[in-house]
Image (cartoon, rainbow, N blue to C red; front, top):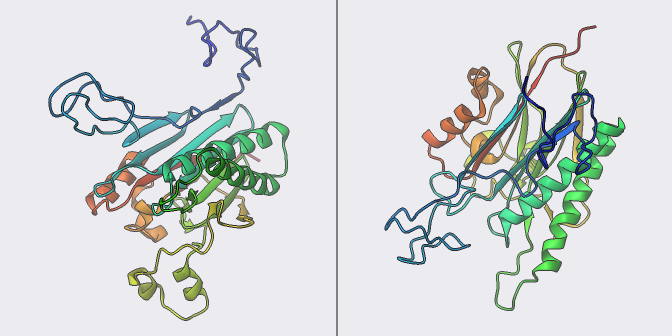
Length: 323
């Protein structure tokens, strides 16, 4: 029989242990690495073969910029899985994901999309995702109110992103646009799911009995559609369609997420994604055929359709408790 080991320090642990005696790690909680999961590091230059790659992913011999470890990220934790891809047109991947689970309690997952026109967008999205998932996992441990936990998670994300401005103030002559990102998260237990969002990253419920979009985009276009000024088709083709009306960032002002809670009666999957996917498959029925697939297939669909933006997909399976 294999010896169980702490995932943090690899010290031996017993099946009944809740904490690692060596490092204090809570063994009931598992989550994506702080700072985000990454893909394999580039071992040698893709042009000249030199192994000398600097900290900014440039070859010190020929100067060629190397693919970043964030360009393609795949991560699975139990039944929860996610893929984040740079896409075909963007210079870097500014999307981030974070997720984890508490044994016997539930799952928390977050997807954030860095606003490309802002400073350090990829840092903003990762800081926001990491801060939020920690709050949501603690809420699972404490059996706290899930809707209040979602509000607290967004507050933590806002604070984390604001710290980027204080840590690295924009220099004179810079763009001066505060780091910012969108946000969507799910807190899923054996009986219910709470979804919270800010911006245009989305959550969907996919099930054999029927699928639905759970979020409403915080964008200029969505607001005009809701007011009856534009049709959905007009909104999708308008050049201002992706102008955000709410976001997370130091320049966003007070931010409170929109929150919904639902209790599905049957099995299905909660899908969290950035707009790199729903730009191509916006409707629930567009995503329904992919229900049996993993996140890789969802990302593949977006890449084959053009891949004009970063694409991030996290899937959280759900099966209601019997009785």
